[in-house]
Image (cartoon, rainbow, N blue to C red; front, side):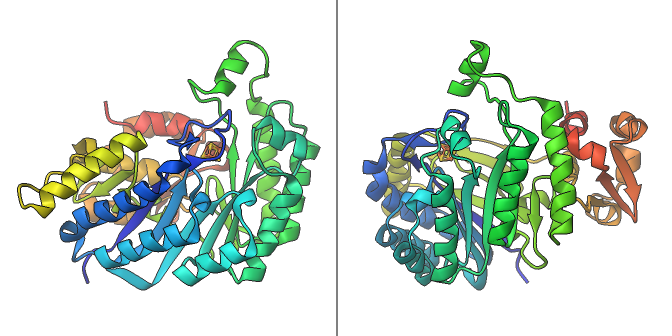
Length: 391
Ligand code: SF4
């Protein structure tokens, strides 16, 4: 069977830009949505030939706030994707959503288009924390959005929460987790707040207006949560992700297993035919470049992908490092026999120098023919990953 791929679609529009966010997302640009939908369809057509023997097994609309797109606009895009790609009938079809843009008719519309997985960005079940994060929804709206998703018929719903907020007490974090568990989501993603350079949060921290997130408090919260979610029968399958049996996010597993995917939309990244590449980030630039590429394709002058503005071929060295770095994010770790089969080398021998300190400090372990992070290593994963990056 032909190699499958995953499809990522980036929707870069948000109603406000949250102070901590460094994603490729823009507030106040919703007027571009209709032109952006058309550009996505054109970009899909540009890739049609190159992907014609690659069945698509997962589709993920991320952002930004994909749920800002009206259903009719979404229909145009989904139809465009289906006509350009061979999307499997049972493909996982996910959409990231913010609670304040969800109601039952909208959600029913999404189900009608084939979406079967919803990931709701709740972040906290405390209004004062949501306010501090510049989130536009309240805690009760988040609960309402989740219940609306269930009533509309979504059977696979994930909740995102953020921990390690400045001055966040353990009890407050525990409260958010308990509220989330009451809703019985199928999947939970938990991210530590990080201060990204260039964001308003980074400026506030630099000026002493906001305290820096406390890594010790974050570690305590993470460890408590690992135990709590295990008791609630969630499988911890990736550093930041937990799922009820059968509800792991297949799309994100594509990334962690270092398999190929195509990203569409402004700033989207791809890993296709042995190369990693990225599309122009600014939506207006993206629209312009996709249009030029599409016109050239139509009039037969060339098949150049002008919207692709950077990229590199993945050398075997890089491929091995990516396989370890991404695979170590999974709780099961990296299968050493599979690594040997794929690259013809023994990972422990080839990376013995890079892994010597992580082994010495018990950040990684070799168990059941897998190399994996230890519980302590999950808190300090970046220390391990940085050592594995090629020079
Ligand atoms: S809603 Fe999400 S993508 Fe948009 S600004 Fe906030 S954190 Fe960033």
